[in-house]
Image (cartoon, rainbow, N blue to C red; front, side):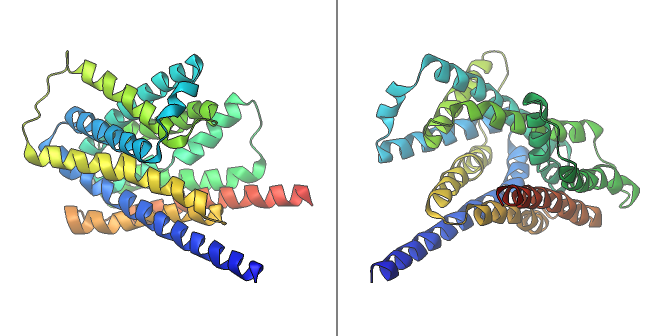
Length: 310
C-alpha cells in the first residue's frame, strides 16, 4: 500500500516536472522571434535594459513568495563580488552582444550559432581544469562544429544568401560569453539558484542603468517596451524558474535536459510563421547537426561513466 502511494506521488511529481519543462521549452521557443520584433522598435541597448530590469523584478517576486530574502544575509563578501562579476557577463555584455548579432543576422542563423555554447563550455572546462578531452567527445564536438560551419558558410555557398560576417562573429562570441557565465557561476553552486539569478540581474541592471549616463537612449516606443518586457519574462526569467522547478520534481533529469533541445526546432517554425523568414535548407541540417552532436556528447559521456562504475 505504501509502495503504491509512493509510486503515485512520484508519478504526480513527474507529471508536474513535464508540465514545467513544457513551459520552459515553449518560452524559449518564442524568444528568437521576439528578439527580432523588439529590435524593429528598440535599439539593442534599450531592449536589454528594459528586459533585464523586468527579469530582475520577476526574480525578486519569486524570492518574496518563497520567503528567501533571509538567504541574502548568508552570502559571503566573495560570493557577492562573484555575482557583481557575473552580472557584468549576464545580462549586461552577453545580451548586448546577442541582440546585436540578431540585429545583423536572420533569426534562423543567429539562434543556432548561439546554441553551440555547450561545446564551447566543454572546451573551456578542459582548458581551465587542465584535463585532456577524451577522444570519444571529439565525435560530438566535430558533428556540432560541422553544423555551425554549414549554417555560417554553407548558407552563402548553398542557399546563395549573403550573411553579415560581424553578425556571425558576434553570435559566436555570445555563445562563448554564455559558456563563460556558467563556468564563473559554478563557484556559487551552494547559493539558491533563483537568488543567484536575481543578484546577477540586479548588478547587470545597475551597470546598464549607469551606462545610460553616456549612451543615448530612446524609450518612447510602446511596442518596444512591450517587446522588451516579453523578452525579460520569457527569455530571462520564466523558463529558468520553471526549468529549475522541473529538475527538482523529476526523477529523470537527463530527459528534462534533452527536452530543452526541442526549442530551437520549434523556434524555426515560429520564425517562419511570425517573422516570415524563409527557412534555408542549410539551417535545418546545420541545427540538426549541432543538437545531435551535443546530445551524442552527453550520451557518450554517461555511457563511459556507467562503464567505469561497472
